[in-house]
Length: 85
Image (cartoon, rainbow, N blue to C red):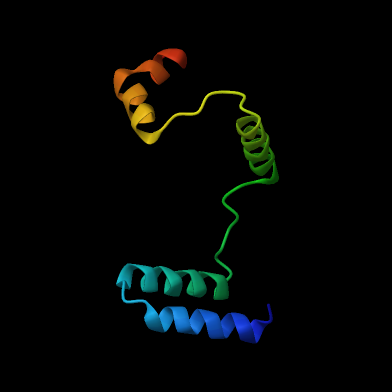
């Protein structure tokens, strides 16, 4: 997709958007990029670990939890006990 195609699509999406939170997020992102204030949130090591965990998940290995299960584990103290707290 060319830059002109992207710009056209983005402009149309912005024109159609009425949620001010989304519009403000877009404005903030563009401002930060133009100011050179965008930092990578994840290091290469972080991304490698995430990729490894995703591959394990796709192979059916390991354990995954729903949001509700995660909250129950946190509230029940299971996670803290496992960490030695």
